[in-house]
Image (tube, rainbow, N blue to C red; front, side, top):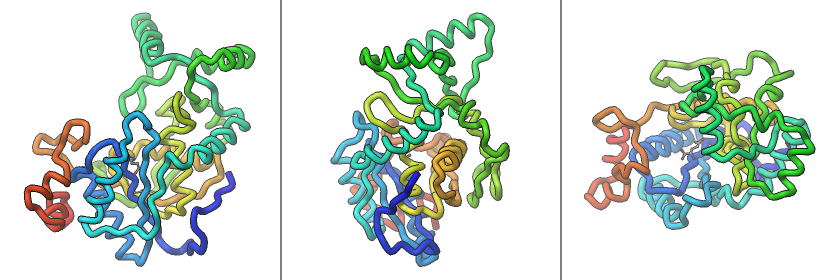
Amino acid sequence: MQVATTTTNRDPDVETVRFAPSPNGLLHLGHARSALLNWGFAKDRGGRFLLRIEDIDTTRARPEFEQAILEDLDWLGIAWPEPPRRQSDHFGTYREALAELGKLGLIYPAFMSRAEAAGHIRDAEAGGRIWPRDPDGAPHYPETDRNLGEPERQRRIERGDPHTWRIDMGAALNGLPANLTWRETGSGPAGETGRITADPAAWGDVVLARRDVPSSYHLAVTVDDALQDITTVIRGHDLFAATSVHRLLQTLLGLPEPTYLHHDLVRDETGRKLSKSDGDVSLASLRQKGLGPEDIARLAGLN
Ligand code: GLU
């Protein structure tokens, strides 16, 4: 893929990091940890801190959450030199990346609804088959659509059947170096650091474009990290395993390989990872209670 950088005069030797929240809720301490680690990393190295708004989930993203993210970061003392990159402004770019994978014969339209796929898997399991699951515990997508003939695919697309686009993982891995790796500089719970062997096959045929938008998290994040010249990806350890998919896409699309730093997560008193959807305490509400940015850094485990 031809990567045209979004700004000019970038010095490739300047460390560039990004904080990439999704505007579908208020930021909590876990986000503060990620944002402050990125910010501190850039500051210590005379590097650049970029902000990316990951809003491809058009059903959940809201402008008021985006606004709240900007306010929270500003309050924390974080500044970004360029306007944030908003993913929903770049659907054309993701479409091009998808088309490139299409030309390589590595994607296919996937027509099953969630319920259909779940039914298929239930039947297979009832018949004694052990169904593979991805690192997040979700079952792999059934092979039915991967095996559809081209005329049938065309017929269904022309008929307007809703579909996502999935990678044909077996085909994608064919011809790639057996040992796909990344450089990890974090110290996650299992202490993984150094050259890590990627295992994209563990994810099965992941979605690269959703029904409603021409991208998925995996595709957009990979393309954007390249377009924004990200040198080190600093993010939570919950995305450690997803890096295997990102390294695969980088290799297929001819994109540069950043270094990765997956940091441990902020957990609640029961050891559970914080989450917006569970209504965990937002930075905004901590601020309202009178806490300052230094308190947030301390609560986020930073000093
Ligand atoms: N948008 C993702 C999130 O809010 C982060 C993606 C990333 O850092 O790679 O969890």
